[in-house]
Structures are given as structure tokens and as C-alpha cells.
Length: 108
Image (tube, rainbow, N blue to C red):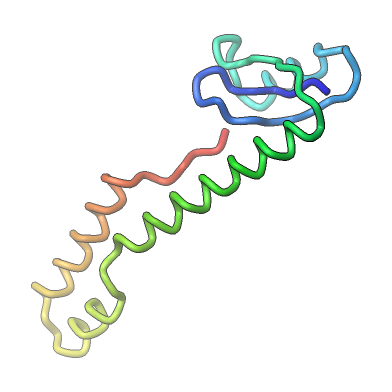
């Protein structure tokens, strides 16, 4: 099977069972990928399943790790109840710091 793979990130995309890779390339370009990002690789179905599952696992693991870095929402709520603007601002600043340090994965 033919598989679109982003050269820059290694992420897998669309698959195709025919040898006509033009469709994969056109679809990748219409999805916003550049020639520098487009790679078409040969994989067996088994290889694709393993690579795709690993990619999904890594995405989930990163998302879970990122989520654990956020401060507890109770800190924010406690600040609201006490009308403590310093505590509220600290919560907001801590959340923004996580967003900068652990950006969301852009799956393109």
C-alpha cells in the first residue's frame, strides 16, 4: 500500500492500495502540504497498523502529559469565591505558561 507521510514530521496520512500516487499527492497538496513535506512510502497493511497505532499512542501520551501540567481548576474557583484577583491571575498565568511550554500538537 502507498502511504502519505509528512517528510518534516514523519506523521502518516492518507493511504492508497493502487500504484497511482498522483491522487495521494493531489490530496496532500489540497490539504495544504507543500512539496517539501510530501513523501509517499510503501508499507504493508501490518506495518501501517503498527505505525498508525504508535502515532496515536504518542499523540495521546503527549496530550495527557500536557493536561497534567495545568494547575487544578479548583485554584481558579477558590480565587473567584474569595475575590482574590492575585490568585485568579496566577492561575491564568500558570495556564498560559503551560500553553507556551507544551503547545498543542498540530496535526496537519
